[in-house]
Image 1: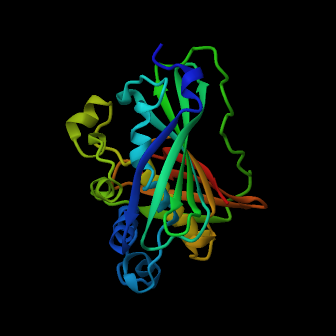
Image 2 (image 1 turned 30 degrees about the horizontal axis):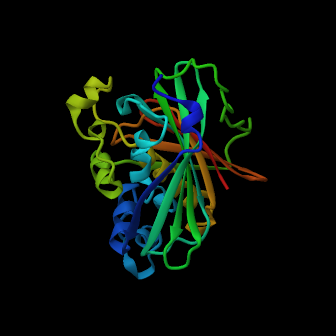
Length: 282
């Protein structure tokens, strides 16, 4: 059996240190839709170094290389072409500096039997080299098609209950036709699914699709501006489940409900009415 649950759960992975500069922050921010319109003070804080701040989901970038090395974990012999990004939970423990270096480690925390596949949950911790404090903690749920049915725990549903009332806020985010090409440079995720039409067709899509974590970032920025007073530092925890794909150039409509313990968010495409993300920001 390709997945040895007993051996895999608890296995650890190490990754290289990750360093970034102001230019990396700006490139990432552009990759998740910042800069439109370019002279707007709201957008300049993401694109101009004078008062630069990061879209909080920059915290998903440092551990990306570790996540891509999941096949090296003990007990996991999986076909990476069958891996889908199911959900992401990011915790930001302190304000994100515009330059810095983090050391990183990761472990497999659980593997759930979802019937048609297995859900592998990896936790990665990014620690600031300068201070020794934890800056980011990421939990990534990776769904491996064809690896379920081993009789394990099915795990939590991961669903959110949304209020029946109208949302308290609504935000619209227009993606660029070239958004995926920009994000692949900002993130280092050069999966051909997001650039190569022939590869996308083989995967069953009419054209290349947007990275799930790009959608994750676009929605986070929309929530910051629509419901958090434009203050990125107010995002401390952000969980999202990916429920559909986005084509670059589509418009994302995000509904936001203010609850006592955080903000519930649901995003769909305007053009196709496809639900693409549900989550919670705290």
